[in-house]
Length: 97
Image 1 (cartoon, rainbow, N blue to C red):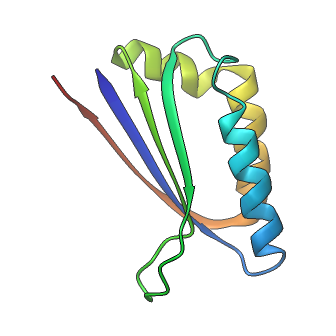
Image 2: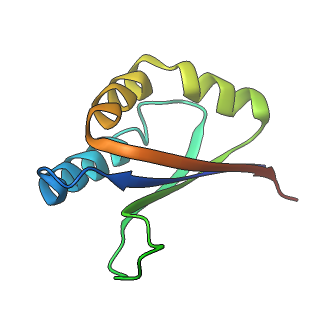
């Protein structure tokens, strides 16, 4: 199994509504992207300076599944929106038994 984790730091302008919209859009990918086995999307409530705003944890059968997700048209629609509302993001991908 492949785990794909992304953390997002949102721009301050319309931050809360944009986070809610991104969360809804990301969750809608379950069932729309065949290789996506699970997705967990969370809006952060920690107030620490190092805190990020939103996280996703997704699960795939293989690297090929993750690659298919990355280029899937429904995922690309979400990416297009997110790119307009985030300052930056961080990613971690790893294999687990």
